[in-house]
Length: 350
Image (cartoon, rainbow, N blue to C red; front, side):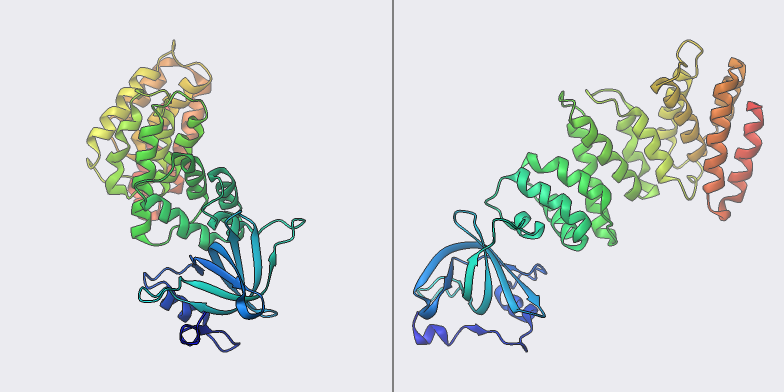
């Protein structure tokens, strides 16, 4: 390292603003305290150098500026940062970190989940497991990376189950992020319901549940394909539950989801049948389809309740009456007319 090069280094002391350094190192505006450097220099006179990647810095009241880095053998190193050399295209030197007291992370200690996850040279399964830990220990970092993965058009398929499970647990406050998440997860559900592997059923159901919690009411028709039993995974029941979730606060506006209501009505007619109504998934679909008709404010709700009453199956009428009452009671007070209508219609089930 030459003196002229060293003069360009970013020196660290207790007054340095770490984020301002990263604005210089990472002009793309990334908020993650991470930089990819070609070499990690350590030792007196910087006579030792090791290729490094996923170099991560963090601020510590006790140790000042610390770093964690993975060498090319995926050993986790850590030490104190003395300076950072940004990459300079006009220089013969690569980007690098200058550090003292660099040493391997003790094997007896578990590497922090954030550093395992950010190590791109580790197997996806190992990184994905760390990601699930981050969901609970550092949700902000986990959210940033879930969004990054969902934006990617080349995401490794091994990531998908973990991304879906994490997305179901994380909170996305920004409407733009919410839009990205439900659209990508819905596409994942459509794709994976056609897979024969049994493990994908859980992925599909998790994705649909998260879609339902983020889907705007005026986009409810996007759920229509889920009501067709065309894949290896039957999504009709979870699709009906998704309709209930979308309209859990307010029922649908009149005649705004006619195509969706028509398909729900077809399912209700089919499953409200004495020969079909046996305890299990068939009964669950029959119940969920009637509840969905209520949420969609369909004029077919009354005929379906009359159909149920004609069966004279007291156990099913009781289940349905309870479910409809619960849904109506959860609606906002501004939907008082719709709430009252549901309560009146349940008299057919007495």
